[in-house]
Amino acid sequence: MRVRIEFPRLPARKDVPMHPDLEKLKSLQEVDREIHRLNDEIAALPKRVAVIEAKLADVKAQVEAHRAGIKETELARRKLEHEIQSEQQKISKYREQSLDVKTNDQYKALMHEIGFAESNIRASEDRILQAMMEAEGHERELKLTETEFKAQTADVEKEKTEARERTQQDEKELAEWQVKRSELRLGITPEVLAHYDRLAGARKTALAEAIAQNCSACHVMLRPQKYDEIRSNQQILTCDSCGRILFYDPAHEPAPEPPKAKKSRRKRGEAEAEAAASESEATPEAATTVH
Image (cartoon, rainbow, N blue to C red; front, side):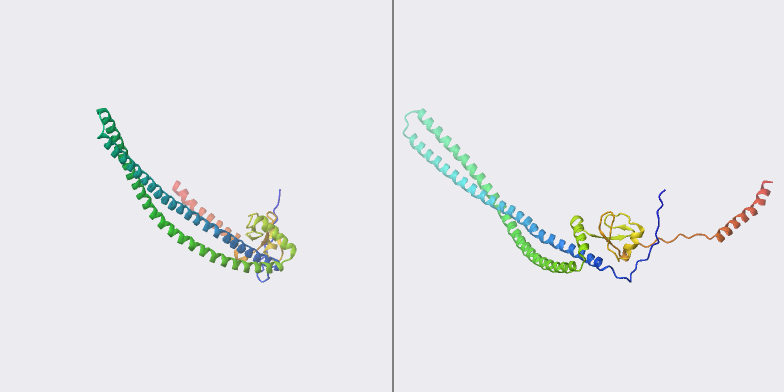
């Protein structure tokens, strides 16, 4: 049978300063997080502008499509008008020829050609009317899309200006954080710093807080003796599971559960005596009742 050995829990020494490497590592991790955040923000700003520009390009394409539609319907209308003029010229020619025909068959043939030309004219006029309606639709949509295009163009320019200003501010802050990072790294023991770099590269975070005898990163329980050593913050200790460097903050230690009240032997004896006396007093009454 395995026996779990409980080591006495030592109080955290608040008056003792933290190990200098551990204190600098905590600061370094916060600096690295801020540098990572700024790098992400700087990289995200152009992408956000690109999304708006893509939407603007789509609206611009709609504007060009409506303009092309108006131009196309105009060309179609002119072509149809030219065809109508050609058919009207044919009708005039056939009417002149009808004055010189000698037979009814010739006259009927010319009338047939005139009727065919007039039919073509009516069909062309219908198509001209349809083209004009399409042109009106394109013009109506063109006005709407041009208004949207102007508004989105203004939004894009505003977004670009804000992105440039935000990027300049981020780059300025990033340079300041990089200086702080270099200063912190110079003050850390090389072997400890190398371990920090390996963990930060592999796990993104190299330090984890020990809370309630657990590693807050991987949630594995720590051995009692090791947890007490971590609580002193006087050594560079790592989690046996995830390898992260552990530190302790007394402010995050959960409050201990209040002890359960236990009755003393004397009070238990008095309670038993009272119960026995009650039973003896009740017995004669019960017998009399039965009798």
